[in-house]
Length: 452
Image (cartoon, rainbow, N blue to C red; front, top):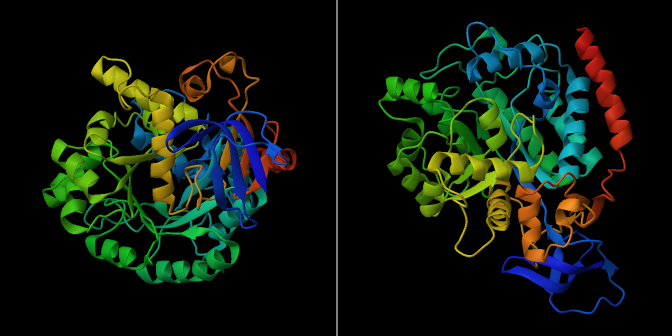
C-alpha cells in the first residue's frame, strides 16, 4: 500500500507531497518527501501520527456522568473511588466487554490508535476468581480485536488497601490477586499476546496496593522489552501516607528501591519535588499524564515545565474516560501550566507551535510507554496514522504548521476524519464500521446496569 498526502507531519516537521509505503504487516517501509502521487491512495487531509493512549481504565467509561452530585461532607478523589467501587459491583463480564468496546471505538474516532489498558478488574462481582482467571483480560483483548485498536495489555497486581500491606477493603474484592495467582494470569496471557499481536506488560497498581516484596516479584515477571506501569503521587494524601509508612515520598521510594528505568511509566506523578523530577527524568521513565481526569478528580497540577526542562518524556491517556480526546488532553495540560505559571505558551520549544510540539512529544513518549513501534511517520514504525478533517471550520484557510495547534487550542469540533491502525483503515469519514452495533450493545448493557 502507498499513501500520498499533500501535507504530512514527519519527525522533523511538516513536509509537502509525501508518500508513505506500508507493507502487508502494517509497517511503514519508506517515507518520501516531494514525491509524485502516481497510483498512490490520496488521503483527503493532512496526515499526522496516531496518538498512543498511555493509561486507560475502559470500564470506567460507564461511570462517566454519574458522580457529579455534590455531597454535604465534601467530595474528593477518595469519595469518587468509593462510588466507582459501588458501581463496579454490578458490572459482569458481558457488560465489561461491551463498555470496553464502546470506549475503544470512541478512542479510535478521536485519534487514539493504541491503548495501554491498565487492567485491574480480575474477579467476579462477588470477588471470586472466574473459572478462567484471565476471563476479563480476554474480554479486553476481544474488545480491542473487534474495534481494531492497538493494545498494550497491563494486568495489574493489587493486594492491599494502603501502605505497609494493609488489609483490602470489601470494595476492592474484584481487584485482588496473590503473587501466585497473578503469575498464572501473566503466564496465561503470554501465548495469547504472541498469537494475537498485542503487547504485554505488568502493572503493580501503586505503593498503596503492593508491598515491597510483591513489587519486586511483579517487576521480575516482566520479560525483556515489556513495559512496567505504576500509579504514583497522584494525591497529596498518598504522599503523606507514604512518608508515614517509609519516611519517603512515593516517587523517591521508587527511585531508591525499585531500579526505575526506561521501561517504566509512572502514571500521574502529580506531586513531585524538584529532586524527584530530576531523578525520575534521568532514569528514563515516561510520565503518564491524564490531565482531564486529574482535573476532574481534583488531583493537582503536574509540574510539566520542570519535567520537560529536566529532559523528561511524557505521554497522555484517558484514565477514567470521562473525556476521550487526545487534543483535549494536551489542551488541559498546557492550560494547567498557564494557570500555574501565569503565562502563555509555557510548554514547547522556541519558535515551534506549542500544540504541534505537545502532540509530537506525547506521541513519541506514548509509544515508549506502550512498547509499540509507533508515534511517528517514519520507516520501521507501525502505520498508525490520522487524517485531519480539513472540512472542520477551525482548519479553514490555515497553513499546515497551524493545523495541530488549531486542533488542540481552536474551536475544533471534529478534528479527525480517517484513522489507520497497523496499515488498516478503522475509521473513514469520521465513522467506525462497527460503531452502530457496538453502541447498541453498550446501550443494552447500560440499561441493565441502570436497572441493577
